[in-house]
Length: 238
Image (cartoon, rainbow, N blue to C red):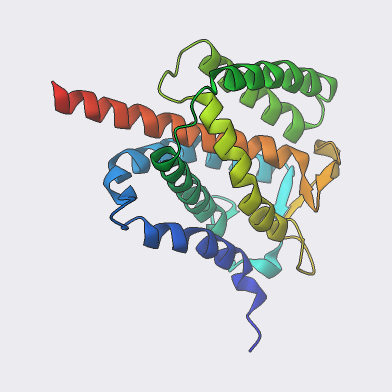
């Protein structure tokens, strides 16, 4: 039986979310016990990214293929796009939680610092060089500023070395989900990008900017998540 193409984006969200959700209740993981930190983190981050999304959609930086969405729009973007900013962070923070539980990631401070320095140098240079390509310039500048805040200790609860390693692991499911959304393995793209506003460099069908955008999205979720967890732990011990 053929699946109605209008369910494509919804199924991508569901496929990203369902397994992490089920395993959230595994007694060795107990991710559900951290929901009090995750939900505020995802809400705050979503406010930033959905606002960004609404503006970029309105000015034509990207658009959504009506064939692959249900046609329910909220503030100019599909319902599935709203769900994206919950489902993908849920799966990502769940993965971060699991790796944090089972792997120590010792001696990665230098890796974190060096990686941050490289990104904080390269991203602004590219952003300025391609300032008129708004997806590239805004994404790269915003990410580098957020990393700068981390580097100078404004956010002290995330170990960046560990985060970068986990993010590299997350790039595997990223290639699958984002690959589908950008047109790999299906007839057309779910999300269409205006070529005037990106570098035109793609991994499979995925604009290179998406990997930086994804890093910013997940790091903001993890940053707020860790801060709330630490605040809660400190409150319980006082």
